[in-house]
Amino acid sequence: MGTWGKVVLWIAIATWVFQDAPTPGFILVATLMGAVLLGLPLFILIGAVVLVCFVFLSEGLSGHQELTLIIRKISELASKEVLLAIPFFIVSGELMTQGSLAQRLIDVAKALFGWVPGGLAVAAVFGCVFFAAISGSSPVTVIAIGSIMVPALIKAGYPEKFSIGLLTSAGSLGILIPPSIPMIVYAIMVSASTPVDPTDLFLAGVGPGLFIGGMLAAYSIYTGYRLRIPTDDFSASAIFREFKRGFWSLLLPVIILGGIYSGIFTPTEAAAVSVVYALVVELFIHGDLKPKQLLAVGEKSMTMMGALLLIMALAISLNHYLVLEQIPDAMVEWIREKNYSQVEFLITVNILLLLVGTVMDIMSAILILAPMLAPMSAAMGIHPLHMGIIFIVNLEIGYLTPPVGLNLFVSSTLFGKGLGEIIRSVIPTLLILFVGLVAITWVPSFSTALVDMIHAPAQKPAPQNQPEATPDAKPGVKSLQDLMKGLPQSDETAPKVKSLQELMQGLPPTPKAPPKVKSLQELMQDNQAPAPTENEPSQD
Image (cartoon, rainbow, N blue to C red; front, side, top):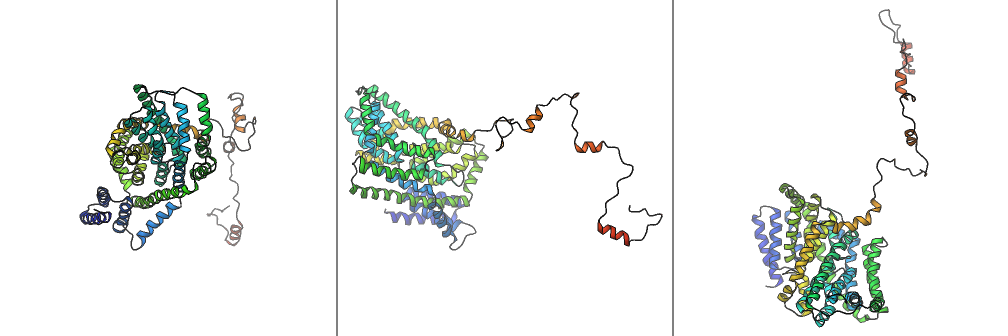
């Protein structure tokens, strides 16, 4: 059945559901699941659901107001500055893939780790870590590093299954090591309920990314030792040579991440800098990118951006409808009624996201689920950055799980293997990622420690029980309160200082109250009034 045939069938199913649907929420869930099972393109699915929800289900709206709301939400999305970072990072990744920046990063990693057991595999893992720090994309990382390292690993004596599985899994670090396109999308989607700074989310991903990368490296060392894979001799001169050759490649993540975290430029500006840097280095310094290749780079980048931004625009509108219908609030209230603890809630969220990751790509899951789960986690007292990293790590695993694991399809195409063979190759590394997910979920400091450390000086609380310094205060000059504290407090030598009210209360009472001071109007009235009689007391 073609795409349009599926669309017609889906409309027929949706119309039948609408007739007897008990609640709008039931309609929404039924239509979404029906469309997913039919395999409709995501932009058609979300766009149709948005129109149906606003036209048929919204209360108090009529005429053109529904479409006006959708257009306004899309316009608000387009006005977000951080959105510009996504196309810039996509273009930057394509430029580095077409040039030699990726190869030079791998050569540096091989020089650093080639002498340890499993050194070449460790170099492949950290090559993915280095490249992830400048690309922001998992599939791009798999293509750039995997196309170079898998043949090298097989040639060095590593099993083909191990080599493909390791690179397919290590490539998923591209969305966890900053900068990360999914992190930017997540920050945009939760901005209405639990605002998250993309820079802080980048910082939160460093610890978990290095932790999972270290676990994959340990697995590589174990495999190399078990298989007795020959290692290279340690050579300081080789390390120096590769660092010199890869200087411009290593400088890029320093500029990008250092500029973001030092406040020199924003993530959006950093993405633009990465494009200019990669273009200048590949064209004029390395000379490995030809001007005629720029057309192919632009074509691939625009195709990817067009699909992503269209889906984001429609998903923003769907999220707006969910907020109007108070669906996130209802879900939060349902969680509260269940009296879930934080542990039970996190277990539920992990299971949900792992299941979603098997049937939905990461961008779709973020666009649909993040606005609902973020306020629920905030209501449970979970740190927004911790929740964001849990979200990303779960969906990172989704890159490696069928039927829609994107890295599986990328590796299948890249290495010319069947999908089943690729799935079997990632099972050992997938188990390692599960262990990493459990550790990251139950140890929030993996995600929050670096952010807290960076922001600690700016958020240091003032010392307690000390007077707050005034802007004009000088060192060594005591305040009046400090001087009075230094006076002797003996009750016998120091008389009690009385207030004005106490002094007045101590005066002897006057026999006659002082005459009342009259106003000019009262004096004039007295002159006109008759004299008082003997039985009538004077007003004076």
